[in-house]
Image (cartoon, rainbow, N blue to C red; front, side, top):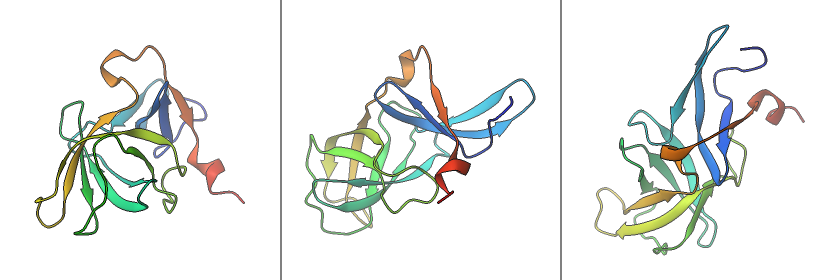
Length: 134
């Protein structure tokens, strides 16, 4: 598929849904945020806390916070990390649904994705090659 490359960002109405994993002349394989192999750096803008969003095979991936103490709570917005070099910064990902402060080694939260992955009609692909260009 002309113009698409592995690592490009896949967006839908509502926010990020995944990244292109591979491309052939006629297809592109997308690794969705729900895929258990998916790991994306995210943050909670209200608290400034970073974490790793890990796919679980369900519509609610797990946010694993990097710090032991979190001030995040249900209802907080989750976006791509402003420090990411693999994704554009501050793209909406979802909303914290439930927080487990006793997660090990650090707190975890279930995140409801903002884009309804189970009911997508269309997606948009954003090339990350352009993001890296000053």
